[in-house]
View 1 (tube, rainbow, N blue to C red):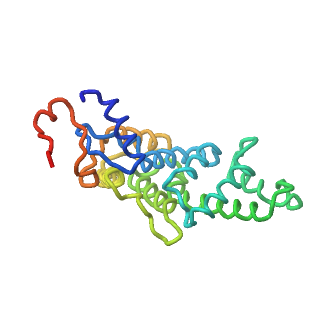
View 2 (view 1 turned 60 degrees about the vertical axis):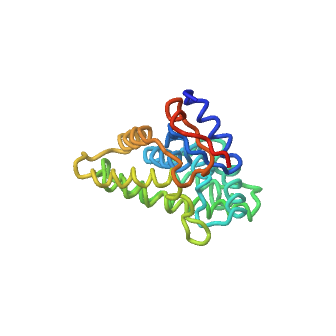
View 3 (view 1 turned 90 degrees about the vertical axis):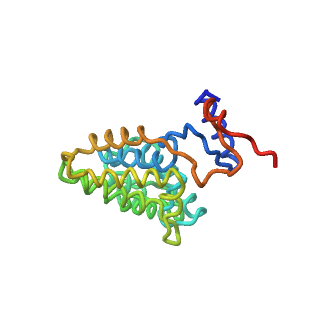
Length: 239
């Protein structure tokens, strides 16, 4: 098909059944979870306590924070209900105070203790995971190398599962493309000026938007999505 939008819709539908089709046009890196997570993390540099952005990070399919699926889901739901809803917190400290017992200050009353403790632990782990990228900008503008290294360390901390593995963060075509993008940024960092958080987020967005991912070796060996010209060069198998 010459219709790129149709090719992307077909690829998305096939992926629901775990089938990756090698499309000659490729797919935008921006559409993959690893790129979405990287952009969300970069956006948090300027607004550390944005509840919508924090929840988006926690709902990424790559985010595990060294917990099993059930424990992570329980803690994430508790944190959303009891700390990320309602009036917008201005700082991490404001958010954490919502999870303290009422007698300790401005905490939440009638909060089940198991939910409170799970949410409190998850919030602490989340903020710790975000520290590498946040600390790079602690004094304002940061060298591009420090920003890129902080982003990579934060992504790995977020993706690490209960066994200490980072799973598919850098795996597959999209993970490899994202790893290559960050490696390229590190390689060229000495030629870039220092960046504030907003400038780094814009730079990362432009780099991601310029990347296209091909299925390559991860694609199904018998399914390809081709443009009109490429299709003329291929003969279907009769096996």
